[in-house]
Length: 477
Image (cartoon, rainbow, N blue to C red; front, top):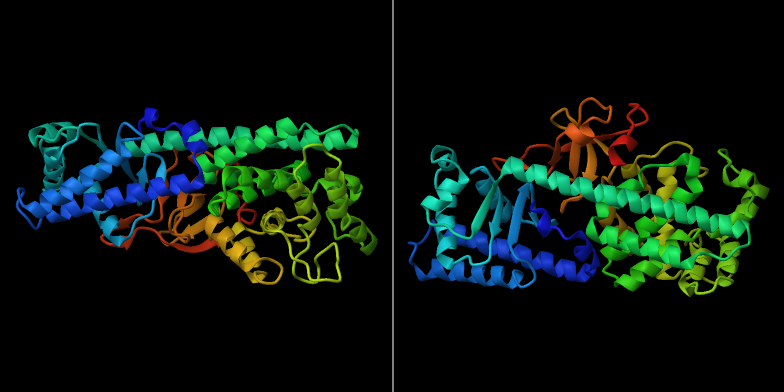
């Protein structure tokens, strides 16, 4: 898609709610396009019903053009995108997408000045023989022959390439934000050990960058949390929990200041561990009873430490104190009364547990694939964790989170790279060599892609990367 239409910085500043409204408006516009293309098969080109449908589409296009120059739809695999936003579609719209792709069209751009007549002519064109473009000299020649102006079409392969470039650039930005966050946590821990003040300005700046990155492309940054940095576990875990908490906040439509506050709380939730001996923190084996009692002190220590930091939010202190106060018997610190965690504490607790499970640390001795970690969270829903928030977390991260290896019914192996509107049908990178080369030369497909009203690929199981000695990290960095 044209680079001038992808203003990543501007998009990142939009609130989650505003983006959802934009996506809803884009979907309605595409639905009007579907109605016009269908009506062409029912009425003559001058019929009021057809012209009325075309006029409704034109109104929606002009509404979208108030905030952008062009209105651009792209079909990548089985997914529909408006600019860089994924648009949820139903079966009816899926059939229209197949119809458009059958003409070797992967992108439809309505430019300023488009008319009702051009829209009708385009609808007529989409109902002609699919071989038309190749026979009559290509897309541009056919548009000119049918008096279609201010509508631009892109071929399927070109769209995939441009979309891939946008995704790769987003991953580069996400990677830099992630490493900046790691450095920030390291600085904070070092400051505590040296009894120096936090650099709150730096932390706030980094967290806001994380919020912007997730609003821009949630999967790119969330995907990095599946890369387990065992040599820097304490730092990476804090960043992972912050990323997952921020992502949950955006999914729940919190406003941006709330999301940032949630990110700070997530990043500092384990700060009390600086008071725990390193040999206990890094111990690979099960803790002794006395060691476990020391470990359980870190929520109290964290809240006390944060209470002494100027400009520190009270929510960060609350989350540091409460994030292990689950509803089950293992929650701590203990109280005689029934514990009611703050919603932020509940969100951070879920993110903390998910990252700990997948990291195979003290509590889980073997590496747990992301999809199995999701099942563990679901099994604890309503007891250790808030059931509503667990459901929202699963809807946010997917049944098969980014970084999951999937076995497909075609015999292929796919690595989950992005979520789609269907939690069971993510977008995957097909792996053949397993040496990382597919990152640049491989094929990324959506499991939503259909042919003849049937899905081309379907998940039949997951694969443990450690058992297959597959280095997932090389594909996600």
